Image (cartoon, rainbow, N blue to C red; front, side):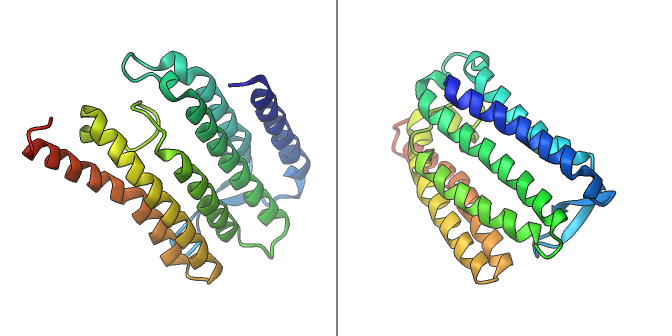
Length: 214
């Protein structure tokens, strides 16, 4: 992780802590922390959980970004795609920050639907992540980690090139459906885009196996 990105994330975490402290007296005692497929709150928790869901999760992503290369075992080194790793982790950090900001904003302004704000932001982040999926190399932290991708480099690479397309398509369709108010279809598009590569990895593996190329 570059110093510039590290300082950006540290300052962002500090700002999130400060925002939570300032907003804390104005928040209800319990806040929505989970939404159902219709984007209606189906779980509430004490407002102190904002410190965990915002600064806490962002700090965890920053720590994993920094420690990931050191923790990686041989043949699964993050160093093999370090720049892509750092970009993906930065996107994940931004997603955690966006979700936290959407939750806080919605609680301070009751006329906003936090679930819809979060879904729209997640769709955009998924599209941006999809642009990087084809560059992800075998590791234990991110990507389509199935028994078949982890067993064979060709299956891993083919699956992630395919996943790049399905993630982008799922994110764009999800965003379009969300804007149109079709929330269930929006979530479905994201899920299909994320899950289809898992099936694809098995199909590719079995094709190579039948051809004796394993």
